[in-house]
Length: 457
Image (cartoon, rainbow, N blue to C red):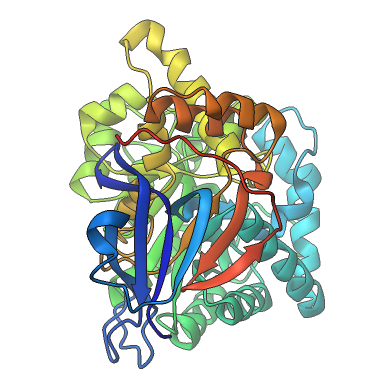
């Protein structure tokens, strides 16, 4: 890739929850270093294009006058969104009604996932799923596949063609699961290791060792997963924990010797850096301290938790404990792919706790949790989720006037928080005019020119 520059308003982060806005900025991207070590720890002969410079147009334009420049007038250039927890096989489960988590799994999720024994079905859903992510501005995702190795192969192959940074893994579930999704204890671990060796560190792809959740894996399978996590320390680990009170009770019955549901994973060596546990609602202070001690992250899934009536993530307790966390859509328990909708759901959840703790979430904090903060929680700080020099060239072109109501609201914004909150509340995929992945446009629509917030913050 040759060096390219993009002019427009700029949004990026200088620290946790601290956004910087340039009303007239310049983003310069160019080739990454040949032979550089990527975020999966592997050497890449053709590294991803990266941000070379970012700042005000007036300051940078003379230095990069020789670089071809595209002017996105009235648009905002922002980091691609990072989704920390999503299920690609549940794309067709969105909006399926159920009483609670466990009945929803039995009635809808497992029957849909059983279809992924068919490689053709895997490939078709993978294509649709990734196009939906990009249409909504999500350029990096940590996602579940199913227990079928073909589901992993299909998603990795589709992501590789798009040059996306994507992390996934075969689900391990050798008990308390119906025929069609239940795997064999030994073969599931053999398949996992083969998939790690085939895909981890290839281009921008990373492997996640993936026990579905503790109740659906035998101790033998969890022990084997922990051994793989130790053997391949640069892989990720992902699972679910403490989402639903009935699930917590079930885990306690199955693992009576464990101090808590979360501690089950720790007992089997599955809590470490690059381990991510979805939900983390029904935890105690010792659990939260353990997350911090093990450098393990939480994927917060507010729209899913609201939809299934699971509970509210305790933001105040998370801040006191000091562990990393970020936002996730959790499709198909989550109600859609849109990061705007997920951020708005997180705002509702934080407001629920605000009456007791006094803690609310600012628009900049919400945006951080779905970009640079989520990247940090994944162990990818400085790689994705931001537009600082050195970051991979995944970025969005946002139209703050994509709909009449959004245009009316953003035109009245008197601060950066007002602008960002208008996008959170009123934005959807129409506000994502283009999504650039590895420096190339992956999603584009023809939209009329518009004006953006012009005050520099």
